[in-house]
Amino acid sequence: MSAYRVRSLDRSEVDSWLDFVHGVFAEAKGARAPPRSYFERHIENDPGAIDSISENVIVAVDEQNRFIGTLRLFRRRLYLNDSVTSAGGIGEVCVRSDHRRRGVATLLLEHAVERLSNAGVELSFLHTSTSESIYRSMGWVSVPQRFVELIRQPAHDHRGHIEQLHLESDDDIHRCSMMYKDFCYRFDGCVVRDQPEYWRKWVQAESGGVAWSDPNLTPVPLRTINKEAYAVLQSKGDAIRVREFFVLENGMKRAGLYLDAFLSKLVAPEQHTVSVILAEPLLSVIGGSPQIVNTFTDTGQMYRRLGDNSSEKHLLPREERHVFWATDAF
Ligand SMILES: CC(C)(COP(=O)(O)OP(=O)(O)OC[C@H]1O[C@@H](n2cnc3c(N)ncnc32)[C@H](O)[C@@H]1OP(=O)(O)O)[C@@H](O)C(=O)NCCC(=O)NCCS
Image (cartoon, rainbow, N blue to C red; front, side, top):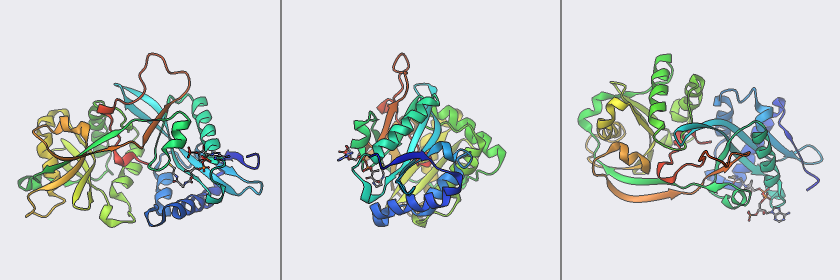
């Protein structure tokens, strides 16, 4: 272990760091690995990420100062238990294949926790589909996210009431941001998006505003022309995945209709039913008698409290209210 040294990334190393991260994931995941542009997008579109790169990227290097492993911290705040909690997301955790199972990731994670705790961050969170055990052994707990697959009837008659959402104008961003805030207080785990830059760059890019490597998976951002509801949808095989969906308080009684009108934009006019994948807590919003054909649970979203905050404030999301929009994933 002593051969490894943990340090911050220097700004001049960003390109070689991107090559490193992409290379490790490409080797580990083959065709399912994200392209280099995915990691680049995260840095470019995370407001302030480049300026704080040395605070937020930790690398483990060998005696020749070569990258062996790394992770990146994503500073966020989350709506949790009717308030706002500061949070540090941990992403891009990877270690060179010939140095694994020697504790490098553990070492990096210890440094990450120390940095976040020293900065007064209350909670750390991450998503993993393959490595729950490392995180669990270090104190992260999984809070499952429940999803349902529903059969819906696209509201073709209302297709004309839906238009593409562009997140460029200050007015659109302001409206989205206000609506988003009111809506997300209903749930536990949504990222706070009160910075216009986050909408303009991150949300825009992750909603299809930049080229996606798989055009079939490119998300489509939509809104009702009366600006009462917004959604980001993604075709996934025969189903449509709701990456996010929010409705102004005034429009809540029409939420189910709005969802069906959004769906009409992604399917052919002659298609009368479509399968939709939705975060389960949204069922109470869309109302009606949903025709559920399947349920899924994702246990990969994990949280760890930091510092001495075990007292009065309940900091972990409640499972039945747990919503983390796909747009905010990293
Ligand atoms: C996941 C990943 C980052 C782990 O890196 P790592 O440096 O091998 O992790 P560690 O060595 O700290 O821990 C891995 C395991 O080795 C064990 N270990 C740690 N030190 C060890 C040692 N000296 N001898 C034997 N085992 C050891 C740990 O207990 C852990 O066991 P577990 O999987 O049963 O919990 C690495 O496998 C990787 O880069 N995978 C590809 C990229 C990826 O999928 N990243 C996403 C992560 S969400």
